[in-house]
Image (cartoon, rainbow, N blue to C red; front, side, top):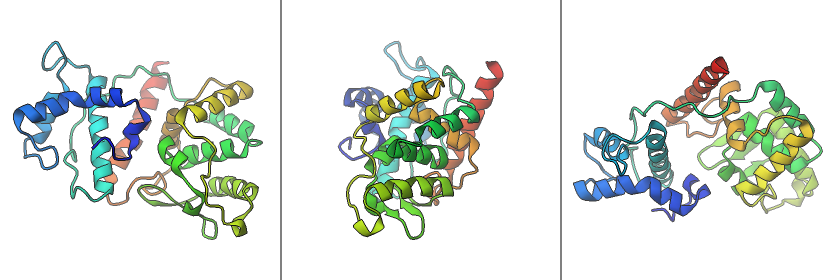
Length: 263
């Protein structure tokens, strides 16, 4: 299962195994089929993710959320590959988020960052797609030029086809011109970054140049969910599964409100 391509591959395999071990161990012990669980699956799952070496019910909320998030990403990939017909975690009530991270950056800092990125065409296009269309880094780095339909301004993503807004289209058009233009029909990767760390290093150097605090790619995506009036497809969510999209937007906005009110 873990050999399937998916968001969990951004993390070390050992970390993914650590997150999933309590769930898989409990499923083996209790004879729970994770592909087709019974009606009491949600209550069973919450009990499974709450276990630590100190016993049931001792895991912190963020630990439980991390375990649930990893399992949810696997289910999402299986649904995308049509290996599952329904999401076993649909309707699950998640533990509340423990707010320990710094407040999300204000819009003016993000605007300043994008302005300073303009001379670096690949970096500017990558950041624009994150900020305007809530791209996840794994999906961003996997993009190849045939996924960009220059004639109608759409971009084929892992779960949906997104119609690009004007800033995103212009940033990719500039990058396409650098690659030879539409007539050259480039086939390679759109971006030169091979790993998350490659992009983070470029973003860190840009933050220093723009004289703003370092803003991670995940924070920029949360800014997008907070500030942009998205549809499911504009943010990269499958349109037939609105619940994950609505939860992500609500979470980004509630986290921002709580953190900024306490800062």
